[in-house]
Image 1 (cartoon, one colour):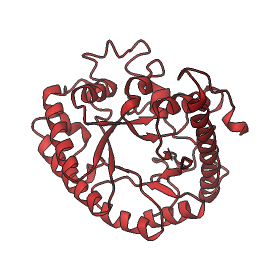
Image 2 (cartoon, rainbow, N blue to C red):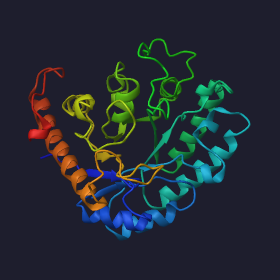
Image 3 (spheres, rainbow, N blue to C red):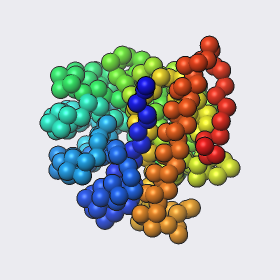
Length: 320
């Protein structure tokens, strides 16, 4: 009998004044898995604290090296990529010490659109190949995530964008797809919220589902609010469709929620969570995540009985 899907949540859920406080609340809410994110300053201590609280880490989100003066966009710059590689290398060594097998990074993040600079694709590919080789030496899989195209919630790429006409757009999507196409050892991290907000017309799971090693599940209403699945309202994500699509990829990892209680800028509860405490928010997230996992398990069982992978998997996850 197959092991049931596990439910996790990102540690950047804005539910505590400190990392330690947040982890304790996550544990108390019933989560068994967590995804820490690294800013280049405290990853080792964070992973040790997670271990002490008996939470499992299926993967870590790397790339937030801003305090160290580097970021994922440096991947594409000849004059800056060495510093980014050294940052990633140092973090991978920490992951190895804690037996973490997967690291998620962005291929780029909301910068090249300003027209002031252009990425060097050959250099970006060469740099990523160097990072992947270092990671493989540590027994770690690197996965790139489909990131948001702008902080304003706009789809700067335009609704007409397709996988066939990305060339020259300098979009985050173009750069991610370029890396996946040129570096076959790379895995894919699927972000449902970014997909819904920016590229709903492109089926990334169909294109790269066979390389899926991590997921970030969150809801929105065509913005990037990182809401709990099911809270996006009438214009939110159809998670029944998401479950069906994920099932057909064969994904068998953790249902990882990447959601936020507070607005990261104002530090006030975001809509629709103004009346919820951080503890209540986490309880709601765990409830919805558990429902998703239950229906995911049912979908996997049903898909194995189906003769066609495109057969519908009809059930309403919120009524499960």
